[in-house]
Structures are given as structure tokens and as C-alpha cells.
Length: 464
Image 1 (tube, one colour):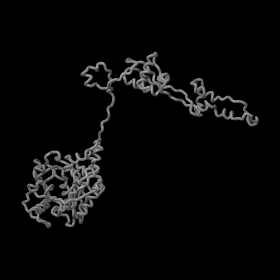
Image 2 (tube, one colour; image 1 turned 90 degrees about the vertical axis):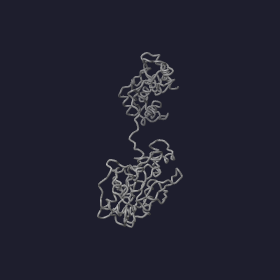
Image 3 (tube, rainbow, N blue to C red; image 1 turned 135 degrees about the vertical axis):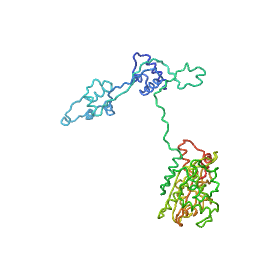
Image 4 (cartoon, rainbow, N blue to C red; image 1 turned 30 degrees about the horizontal axis):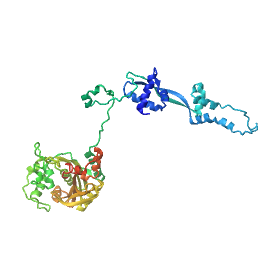
């Protein structure tokens, strides 16, 4: 019998009685399991005021499995007596002439629904022997309600534009709204994909023994952002088309002046084995405040601070923070992004050390196929672009830039001549360099991501 059929049959049964009926009795009369009737009752309650149902509970005694066996075959004592052979036994061996199987008789009374004829002492004794069990049965006392009907009609849950246009809503029955019901809890508290990947990068640096640099100064002077890195003042990156310059405060005034003079000299006259750029270096250009274009300005500050120590000690620094470029916003460029930078300073560091550290770093990201291509940077020599083979795109993709800092940058700071500094940088937004970063984004977004679309997006096309 279908659920709707059970519900309508139940309604017809209730229509025939006055005062209501018990769901157990209705289940027996309909010939269905009691739980089926309970389900029909709940369905009818959801329709509104069709029926009233009062939950009741009652207790009765039932035979256990062993008790049922005794009721059918007799008690254990009676079966022992019945096992005496027909020829009998000497009286000396068996002193009983006949028995009355009271246990079986008592259990049969319970089985026939006449447990009320037993005393509580008898029932408790049989319960101790695990022949009886007391069962609590919950049922509904069902009565007619104000909207009682013997047919079940589906109630509408939504008022549609079609109902309003045709006027059919006037004849339809709507399910009552429960304004006290709690809505589905919104998903909240998730990490942004960039922050999740940033945490993973940070963990990798810490596992490799790096110390995080303080990068809480978005505003930087041109001296630290460009001049200290041996980047000439006529370099295109220092043009207003590429860099955000501040109007207030326009200029910086606090510098380590002896260091600044050495930087000026190596730019304009050369030194430390270099001929420099041979131009008229101007303090006014170095004083201009900007929004930093890379976190390498922080690396320069940290290396200068390291050079002021009485005794040099090797260091490993890293940073992950925002940088700003005066880009024209389009499909492949944004005005800001996050730069990841690693710096290692030690005696006798070589290009081979840089390649080894890069292999270790990218392997921890899950990127094992690397290639290196010679490149040019104003403050590193030699310099290398780093490429990784992407299995999804089936091509080599640039994942970062790297190099060995130039003597023209390090020696004016006061670092020992035999100290080398290797460094590399990449953009946090580039899923190309974080093989598993795409999987994290897929997980958080909750749907498939087109790899080519991601790699062509502005977050992936920015320079490190």
C-alpha cells in the first residue's frame, strides 16, 4: 500500500469512529506495520489541521526468545521429566510421580495477552530468569481536526508568478510557513585561497630554517627600493608610469649617510672592481617616497643591518607581502600583488648553491621538473629565470626569478668580500608555481577550474 493510500485509509477509519482511535489498533485493522501508520500520521500533520495526534505510551509484557521456546515446548523441568523412558525408573532413582508445568502455563497466559492475571511477583521472577521482558510502546491517539477530510491533497509550498497571473492561487492550499524555523547555517570562516597558499609557503620556509623579515612598511624611499640595489636613477622602473610616488610626505630625510655616500659613489664613479653607471647621482631622486615595488627593498635593509654586526654570521631570510606597480588595469595586470622572496647570505655561495636551494624549495611545493634560463637583473649577476614543466598545460611555465646579488650592492653595505648572497622571488598569485595551489582553489571554490583560464588570468601573468 502506498504512503498516500495508507494515509487516506487511515482517514476513512477515523471517520467511522467517534472520539478517536489508537494508531496500534489502526495498524492492526489496516494490516500494516505500526511504523507505516506513524509515518502516515506525521505526513497528515504536515498538511495542517487535518487530524490531531496525541503521543501516548503504554507498557506490556512480552516473551523473550527463551520464554517463547518454553511456551511452545515446555519448561526445562517438564522436559527433563518427559525424558524418562516408558518402562520407568526405580522409585529410588525418581521420587516424583507427576508434575505440573506452571512456568509454561504462566508464559502462555502472557502470550495470549492475559498478563494482568499474573501477580507482580510472578512477572518479576520470570523477568529475572530472562523469560519475560517489559516493553514500552508509543502510539498516537488520533482524532479529527478542523480541516478533516478523507482525501489527501498536496499543499503548495511556493507562490509562483503563474499562480498570480492566472488567479489559481485562490483555489490552492498552501503549506503554512514556519517563521520560527532556523535556516541553513551559512558556510563561514574559510581561509581565502591566497591566504591558505601563503600559509603553506611560510611553513616551507620555516621548515628550511629561514627567518621571516618584517615587511610592514608599504611606503619606502627610492633609496632603499632602487639605489641601494644598484638600480640606476634613469632606469625605466623608476618612471611614474611604473611606480606610485607619494605627494605627502613626498621626501624621506633619514638615511645612514655614510652608507648613502658609498652608494652614490658606486653609482656615479664606480668602485669595488666596478666602473659604475657614470652619471650624476642625485639625492633628490633617492629621497622620493613611493609605494614599494618589491620586497627586495626589505632585503636590502636587512642585509645592511647584518653588515653592521661586529662578526658576520650566515643568515636565511624570507618574506611574503604586498607590493605595488603603477600598471594599467587590464585582463593581465593588477596594481598590486604579493611577492615571495628568499635570501641566503653565507661565505662562498655560488650559482650551484642557488640552484640546489631552488630545487629543495620547489620540491617541497611538489614541483620537481625545473629549468633555468639566463636573465638580466640590475642587482644580481648571474641571474636566472626559473621554469617548471606543467603536466596539465604540457608546457614549461616561468615560476620565478633568481640570482646572486652584485658586489656593487653588497660591498657598500660593509659585508665581507668573500660573503655571497643568493636570492629568488616569485608571486603568490601565480598558481603556475604552486602545483597544488590549483587543487586548493578547486577545493575551496567547490567546482572544476579551467587550467588555461586560470593561467591567463591577471593573477598569473604578473612579474615576480
